[in-house]
Length: 176
Image 1 (cartoon, helix red, strand yellow):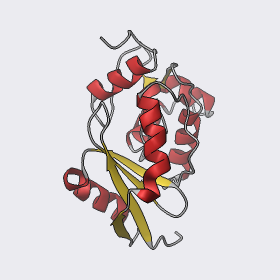
Image 2 (tube, rainbow, N blue to C red):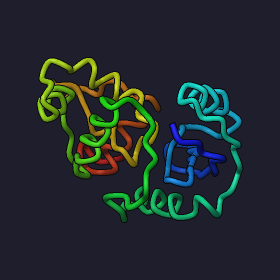
Image 3 (cartoon, rainbow, N blue to C red):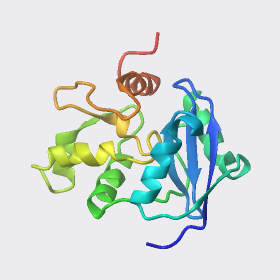
């Protein structure tokens, strides 16, 4: 694994709560639901698991473009993101995350559909596991992956956030 000397992070307020966004020299590498104070242990665990010995530096200027694009998304002005990403995961996870990135704004797909599309139709549970490990929610829209029967299953930020995002995009009944 190539060394990353530092990861910049910043917090932003959103309609679903505070988001903490991280960026390496390669691109956005994580989004966590909560302030850095609240998610610091989660970020530290992720960094250790990915064998990254980095310094975390609070720097809103470095995250300006990501914050702006996320704000536009939450205002309903942006349907896709144009940001470099630094995906850290297994080959399978990265395959799944790249497939999930292809789900259009306002659409959903089931775990089974994703499994079929990557050529592993029996890997439905593995798709769920990879989706659960998505380090960059919203930008990699794992909220758009639902149960085969249309149910709102699993979301790291909570089902309420998943429902909010799908309502925002018009994929399910509008936000009241």
